[in-house]
Image (cartoon, rainbow, N blue to C red; front, side):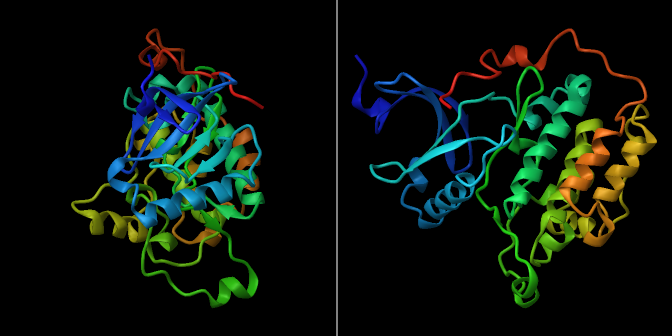
Length: 302
């Protein structure tokens, strides 16, 4: 018999998918309909944390404005009860970071599809007036067929334009993931889509080399390298990368926003006609998805 503690509201917790620093992600079944969802639930030690609850609210407010096959769907925010949680579309539980732990060859054969679909999702987000602010491999879910969805809008924000951008003050609290942050994000400036393009360039670099573009002896050293160190070329670590793709990555990681592709749409158009590899990689014999038996699309309501 199912115990009461196995429920969050009308959702029966079926399986823990992932444990994050502040949240747990569960596969859950809605009683009555039997539909399956993913629940993003604050961990017990953060459920009274007002900042973390605000992050959930921000994520839901942004996500409910988005409607695109390459952006994770979010259906509800539940604040009643003992544990605040978000109700999301249940999709592949494998993210790009997990795949890259097997090495870039594990997904190289479908990397063109992964990156294009990720760009499609980000373009939709930008077209709705939001910048993601935390682009990294962890925030792209990937299915067995290469279908990709952008996730996690915790620190995403509205893009400031015109006078609002001109009069905005530098932020004292810098948010993001150090290994992927743009120079202007590190400096606390107002951000637009070109900041995401920089972070996306770091993801491109890692996706073909299996390495981060910059590492540092300490957090400040790492951030300083994003600001002033020479831009690395993925060709140094992977000779199979085309010159055209390497040039695109370097353009995306330009220190000044004005030197990068102007918009995600411009980047997407270029990506569609750019070959990533000189020699097309083969499908590996042992798939990364063998470790994720439930990976791939799982039925979710429309």
